[in-house]
Length: 123
Image 1 (cartoon, rainbow, N blue to C red):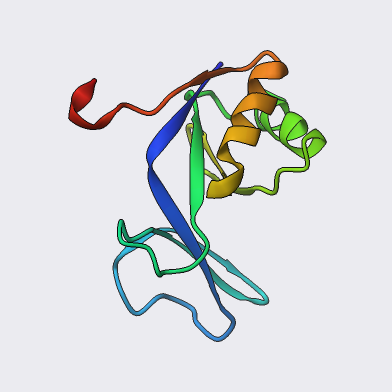
Image 2: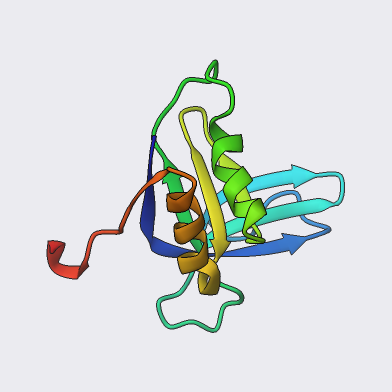
């Protein structure tokens, strides 16, 4: 399994009274009894809250056990907080941006392949 570090950064918000966000700038939504969690792209200029970096796991079937656990285990052992958004085909594992290097080191030390994000200009 290869994990890609996404070039984008994300922010999380919680709105206890909402059932749907008022804008259409969201990436993922989770509605729970305690309210709505909204994942959005972070502004490149900052100022929109705590920024999260994302690891995207290779596509895998829903019948493959342990994929997410194999990513979360090393991060938990390293004390790196996570937020996870799973799709039908893959998982997006977010870590606080200041902990990205710690998370990458922990995953590589656990034998996971982590591909760096593409550089600006495609280099």
